[in-house]
Image 1: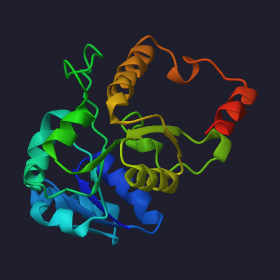
Image 2: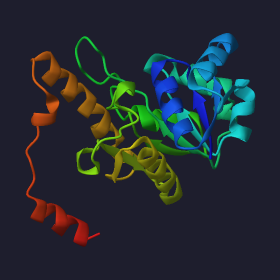
Image 3: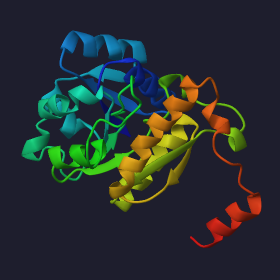
Length: 220
């Protein structure tokens, strides 16, 4: 698969490296072409820096890995509002949380829904915003692999995103449609608050009896 990455920071590079190791090719774009080239060079020979306008035609899936404040400007670079991403799996990794207050920045709705409005026709999936880039690739025991909650409305886009999560070493968990993205985004603020209190958020949610998990899986 050719994965388009819109973004040139550490998350974009780390995800790109992990997917390159899994056999994918990467096309990287951003506001500044020299920075995009530097990011592609950091990813390795499987990555190429491209002009943002060329990204939609090259990508089988497009990953938005930019700061929340820059997401609309970044999408405008690829012509999203003109429908250039229609039909494309668009994975929103943005984390729209105020790092000072730990509160979600959008007053209503979610970042993912704003991305969907900005890119008409795109199949938007919320994913990968809760884990720092250093989490990937995960190569430990499968039973301990990070569970990545994802949500979206298009089954094929969810399947493609789930496969890419698995290629990172994670375990995808489809938790609903895009209307549930705000809850996923607010979870990032919860994690930050627990960390700020000096505790590991891994232990901030209850353990679940394996029998309940098996019962839940049997009802799918």
